[in-house]
Length: 112
Image (cartoon, rainbow, N blue to C red; front, side, top):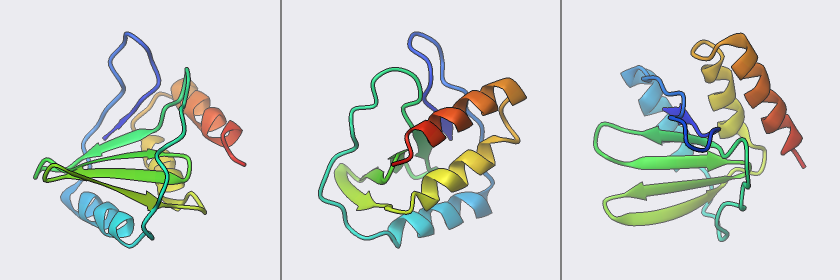
């Protein structure tokens, strides 16, 4: 799992436990189908990326979850932004306090 923040610098990343990865995937799969692509994030915070052991990959930004699995892309709508909030909470244990504060403020700034 990683959080995309920097241009020209590697994104902070960490591993999820098997249980957390499975639960996260289930929560993403339960989201309703979406119709729109993620908004253009510009500079700064550009969302979270999760990659599973089977190669599936999800990008979570604002209220859109984009999943690429087996060569197919699907979009899901997360209007309450529950998945993004969950990933933000999980990142706290893996980011230094200053960096977490920056990510948290940018997630909050992107709130409608």
